[in-house]
Image (cartoon, rainbow, N blue to C red):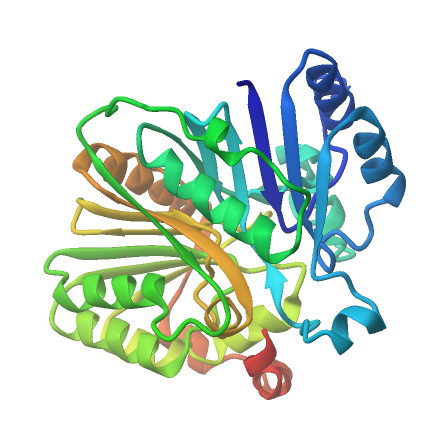
Length: 351
């Protein structure tokens, strides 16, 4: 059975090559492809309801994650609980996962840079996702249908979405789905364990870098024992407070020997980690408290040198397009910057 399952925080009618996503999906529906869509009510708040109405009329199944209304709050849905995942699975054998939303901001050209007026919607966005094939795709399908059931989506014959698939390549992949209320946040446990045993290098990228205390401590300890710690973060964001909250934490990391790079002329949104050239993470989880406490997230952990090398190349490119933050420069930042950091830290829990 031909199928497309889409689960996105931000779902817009994106255009590629002059063709809209809605037209593409409607054409696929007319060809007999079964399409199921989950979109986050908060993230997709600005998306016209007519887009989802048109898809429903054409035969797609559509679920709104945690609708924002009085009825949903009364039934126990927290408006702060968001589905931050970005998942696409095609025919049960090919999947995409990472930081990239179905957002029209990605249509902005490289030449857009970051506008002087601070309008991030018209900036160039730098992001990363990974294409996955092989038996592990079934793990993403399961996460999708678990959320579908929790959100009371219409009945779907899920068995047809899980074809038998032969192993692809020679690298090992694990999919980690996380949600509020998890007793053990498995992605962050995996990341912290990898950081603690790292011997050579830890390279990270986070679109929203507001690391909890334990994570900062683990990273600092790694740098102090001689690990090459490099952290790529945005200099501009659609949530500027997150930039200032992150900068407030630079001091301890820089003193420990970490290298921090702020990407210029773009909005950095990718969520990447590569450790010792063998352990790689690509997903939707930022290095912030929100990803642990409030959001549904999904991350792929890959064990293998080939993927690690590709991600290191991406991060090297980002570092080359960044401004290195030094401890003396950070210590000389202006009084106004200090104030912005203090204000941002007041809201850090909710970022």
